[in-house]
Each structure stands twice: as structure tokens, then as C-alpha cells.
Image 1 (cartoon, helix red, strand yellow):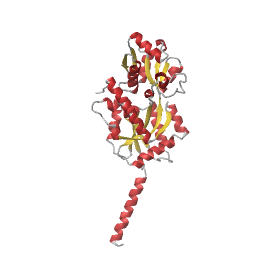
Image 2 (tube, rainbow, N blue to C red):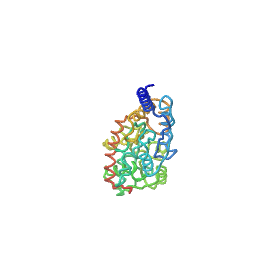
Image 3 (cartoon, one colour):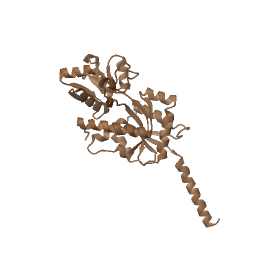
Image 4 (tube, rainbow, N blue to C red):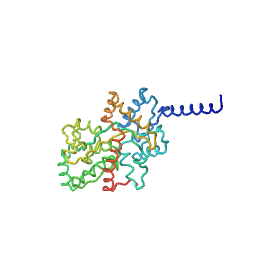
Length: 324
């Protein structure tokens, strides 16, 4: 073959090969980094997502979960931010890791708005304020009266700078009451404190509170939702109890890629997630983990992140929360 023609053929084949490889994603296993320890409800939801997305009708490749708990998400985020922006290392991101944790440090350990690019949200779970029956608190009015009669009220919080912590600070300010935050290690420890009557109130995930409310061991006061929750139909929402929609704060989880990842990868993850949310099996698995299935597109994801950052940053500053 003429050398000139040979060079053209080689170039054409090379381009075709590159195009084919660019179209095929994934062509090898994908690592999903999780900031949550194995066994938690979020971990269950993550595994359900991986099982669905890896189906041959969608990605057709294995997704490997890498649990990196610690530092309110800092450990996972640091592993993620040092990975290549090629779509083969992605991250399970929640409200705390994306919109709270980095802003509790004077020197941000990572910048989610610059370094992360949300592909899709797939689940939300609501928060609910509960009280012990012994406290006599059955409503927001009761909560205010209780605090005023004692010049203070103790809120148990599962961790400093957690959504429950910041919402507790915001709620106390909204009601004009003095409060003390009592930090414990996780919701389970907080529930033990409540049952031991070491403090009267705490904000919990609905899944964590449900069995205790059903058994009468805890009393639901208010959900941080727009409308009443099906699980707690007699409990007013934040909009009803406070007449303030800014207190509507559901915890959410989603999938994020690194900023700068190829747009086709971002689109594929969003498409597969949306498809999974139409399957009964995935929806059931999310509900078992106490998440409400809900899809948010990349555009909606970005909008939610910006709104949450604005809300949480203001309370981080007002409450003087710093993890440095």
C-alpha cells in the first residue's frame, strides 16, 4: 500500500477506536466512595443504587463501594478529590457533606461548588423534632413554654455541625428561647439519652424516630417538611407550626462526579438513576432504608445545593460552629 494511503488508514482507524472508547462508559468497574459506614441506612441505599445501575440494561459494569467514614465527610471527600476526573471514581454525596461540613472550617478542606458536579439525587428523608412523654411537650407552643419556664432547654444533637445541630439552633432562635446543645455520638446514643430522660428533645431522621413514636416512647412535635408526613399524619409540618418555609429541610443523597468529568458520563449517570427510580425493586429498597424515592436532575441538584449552602452557612456563622 502507498505509504501516504497507509498513514490515512491508520489515522482513520485510530480516530474510530478513540470514538468507540469514548462512547463506551463504563468499560471497567466504577468505584463509588461513600462517607458513611457500612450498615447504615444510607449505605443500604447506596448498595441498592449500585445494584440497579450495574444492570446490563444500564451501565453493564460492576460498581464497587468504598466506605470512607470520618470527619463528617472530610475523609471521603479528600479521597474523591484526588481521583482522576474520568468517571471511574464517583461519590455518594449527602446534604451534610455537600452543604455543611466544608463551611464549618476556617480553611475549607474542599470546595463542593468548585470541585463536585452533581449528576442526580435519588432519595430524600425527612427530619422530625421529638420529645420525651415525661417532658409534657406535645407542640411547638409547649416547647417554648417549657424553655421559658426553666430559662433554658437542652437539645440533644447527634454531632456538632450536623443538620440536627444547626436546625436546633435555628429553631431556638426562631422561638426566642435559650438553649444548650448536648452533643452525643450519633442518633442511637441520642435516643438513649432521651429514653434515660437526660434531655427532653432531639431532631431525628424519621426512620430513626418511627419505632419509638409508634411504641409511645417518644412524641413527635413537628416535621421539617412542607406538608405532613404519611408516617406522622397528626404531626404538623414546619410550614404549619412555624409559618416559615425556610425550615423545610429534607436530608438528601445523590451521586456526584468530579468537576471536569466528561459531560457524557455525567449524563449517563443521571439517565441510569432516573431509570432506576422507575423500577419497583429500587424504590422498595430505598423505602426500606427510610428514604423517599425522588429524582432530581443535574440542574435541580445544583439549585438545591446552592439553596442549602445559603441556609446552612448563615446558621454556621450565627451559631459560631467551627470544627477547627
